[in-house]
Length: 167
Image (cartoon, rainbow, N blue to C red; front, side, top):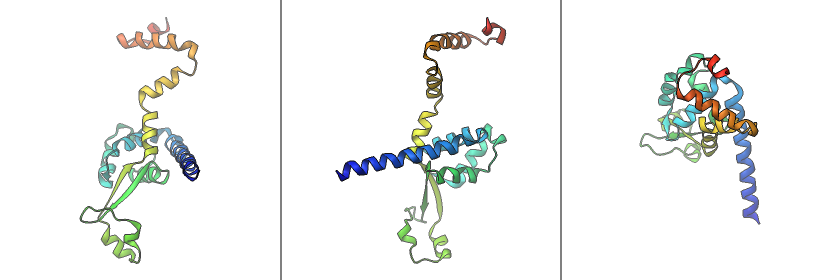
């Protein structure tokens, strides 16, 4: 019974994290695509400086409303990214490793900070793949899906003017 209850609690917590993450990512349209790309980029653990440099290469960054570090922090705070602190030897620094240390000693212990996408972050990336978005849009009015597909196929054949599509 306790195992079932803990799975239910885990699922509820996961749902809350996903909702919070979705809200953060969708809050500002100018940052949305960048945040999704960062989540995808961090499927493998990445150092902070690498993530910041990657963000600055995105074409959307020109119109971004936040600096790269702030975007990363938003994703950490809402459960999309896990922050991983590493010691000089590459081992993970755990909270118990920092117990009893001064702030300066902790700074000396942590040599690099990395980020890796959480399960909630992966779910959000999957839900925002272009194919998934298109499928969701086509499903909004199911009786028009055939027409939408015909129009998409028509414009995929060759570049079309608005007048040609309107006909």
